[in-house]
Amino acid sequence: MSDEEWAFIERFILAVRAPNGRKPTDHCLVLDGIFWFAGTGAPWRDWPEEFGKWSSVYPQFRRSTLVGFWEDIMDALNQSSAARLFGPVAV
Image 1 (cartoon, rainbow, N blue to C red):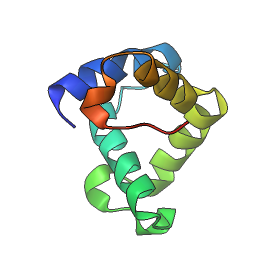
Image 2 (image 1 turned 180 degrees about the horizontal axis):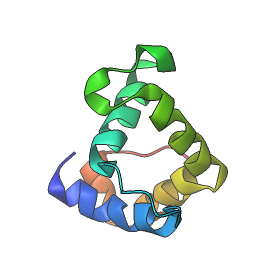
Image 3 (image 1 turned 180 degrees about the vertical axis):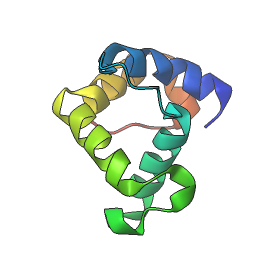
Image 4 (image 1 turned 60 degrees about the vertical axis):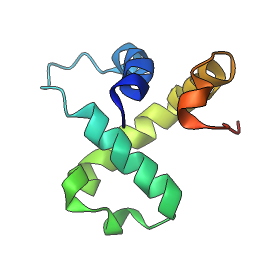
């Protein structure tokens, strides 16, 4: 993920981050992994270790899905000029 792409998405990450006192994960790396997962359709257990442990990332992905994180990003992309960063986005 480029710095420009990360700058666009970072505000959404900070908005849904749990205030539980845990040290933040490398969100950019986790998002790269989630994009890999979405692009390949692979099962979670085939998650490459370079993106972290799948058993840690899946709950984070699930929580973000339940609070509408991905829909918020898609809506913001479709309403901004940042869509050029990611290409066409289907909601």
